[in-house]
Length: 267
Image (cartoon, rainbow, N blue to C red; front, side, top):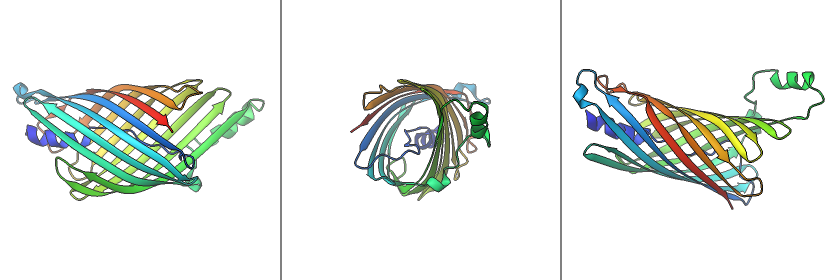
């Protein structure tokens, strides 16, 4: 029983860095390195002596390069290590994709009439709004625990409202991946408040393996430091995760803890 859970989590638990909706300017490049750890306790109500803790570490590297104002090339590598008592598993995942600007899909994420109401109620204030949308598609491969390859498609939306030095940013991403032995869908939402060199917010992610019925929900609080005159930013995230696994009806996944450290450099 543990072996099934072990291999399932090895391929599903990690939450590597994501690119977002913004395009990289033509000729520019960006690298994002993320490291994270997660602890996921499992409880067996009918056999409490079988309770144990899964521990996972992962690191992810995302490279982005702007081919032109409308197309960005993405390459991502992720390595995961999952450990339990007496057993350890390691897997590598990769993606190669194109991200294309899709301005006609940039409908915004604010409720209807909110922005126009703000302009009407406070006409003397300098309200600014930026709506972004992009489409992404590419190839995927996974080296272990089972070698498989396939493709993914996705859409990203962003809505940024600015007043003076303060901005409120919403971002949404949805993607579907089809591999040779299964498929899964992934949705993410991020809310952030920006002022000066600092950005604070929260991120929620839902992952569902359509083949096995595995479902996870993760939530984290994020703090970012981005000096205005520098080309780098550092983000620290901390939160929790919940899991539902239909293949293991006798096992109950308790609330897990996670943290991430992310470094991004433009060049």
